[in-house]
Length: 99
Image (cartoon, rainbow, N blue to C red; front, side, top):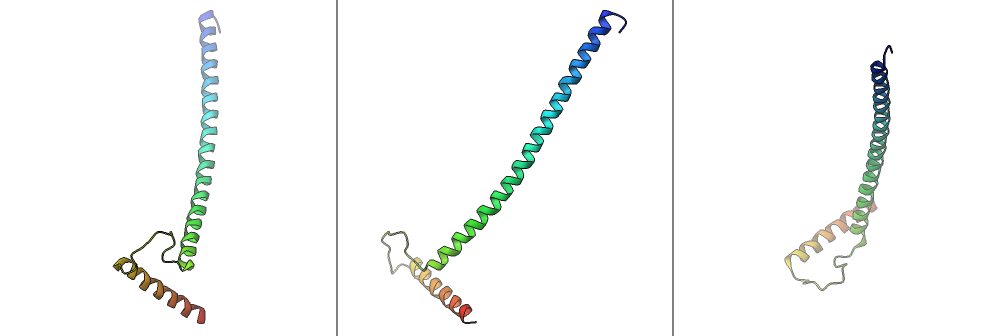
């Protein structure tokens, strides 16, 4: 630098470049965090889906039509259709086990 103004400009430029480099480094770190969190969330989502499917299968196998302990109208159309569906699925499972 030939004079004080150029020296001040050089210092300001160096400071600006240092701030820009620091911002870039922070951005790279945040981007890495987002990628890792995305992978983790994907893994958790697949595990949760598998757990829900397993619970559905276990619920179907239990064989309880009234499992919540509350009274129920046993002659209602909805309950009757559930009984018919349950008997059909039990018969289908029995056929599968015989094969």
